[in-house]
Image 1: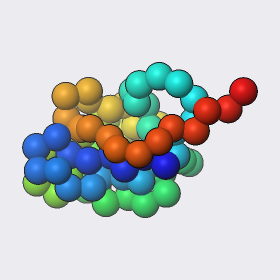
Image 2: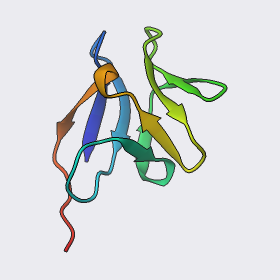
Image 3: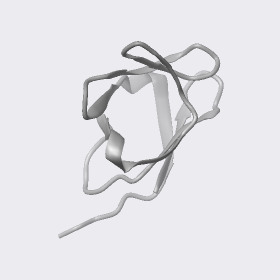
Amino acid sequence: MLTIKCGRCKRKVFRYLKIGKGQVLRCYKSRIARDFSIRERANVRCRCGNLIGVDEGNWIKMRRSAFFHTGTKVNRS
């Protein structure tokens, strides 16, 4: 489980189940366990107003410089 945090204010934005290797470029909505974000139409923002990503339908396309994450990724073979 990853905790995705805002790069500006360090608040939690999501609790996310990351499966597999690689970077967090898309967050699939079905894998978000807890959502602390604010939605403005297609924009996903932190409570401080920082734009974290854009809602693309089944997933959220993340902005690389807007967030960081802590926790461990689940590796499936």
